[in-house]
Amino acid sequence: MTFMIKKCTFEQLDALQEISIETFNTTFKNQNSPENMNAYLEKAFNIKQLEQEISNSFSEFYFIYSNEQVAGYLKLNTNDAQTENMGHASLEIERIYVRESWHRQGLGQFLIKKALEIASEQNKEKIWLGVWEKNESALIFYTKMGFVRTGAHSFYMGDEEQRDIIMTKTI
Image (tube, rainbow, N blue to C red; front, side, top):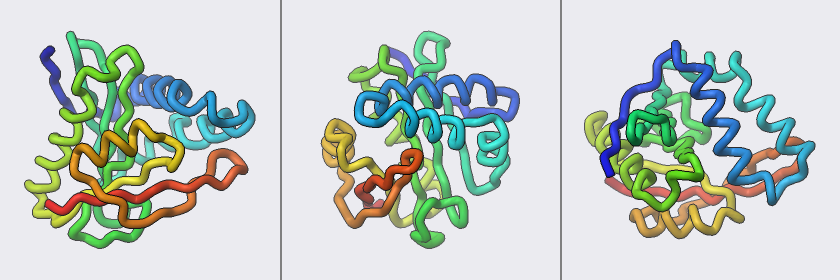
């Protein structure tokens, strides 16, 4: 299968919003109340929020295409855009979202490799991400990709405090 990665542009905000809501909802709706899911989706993926994120010079979005269809995306943060203060030598993978119909086809690995390439180009020393502690398949995947658990932080899904495991990989 052939994949292609292209940087997401401001003109693609509607597509970014659509895939964000779809993939987040598919992944987490069964483990969270509808009220908390709706509150989170409205806050995190409204057009104004996504405009701010894509306009941030320290954040980058990349769509991954399979057969010319957007199959998922990657969001990277550096410097002050990181969700935790990990310093200027770090790059954060804030989101790897892949549509359900493309799960288990290697897109996640492809996106991790892209993130590592960018981190290397930017002379970063480590790459890190946060994974919900109940997302067992993601924890297994990132461990296989060489990430190790290095901490935790709180994450709010609506009004419910949840815990993300912080995983790091040295470059």
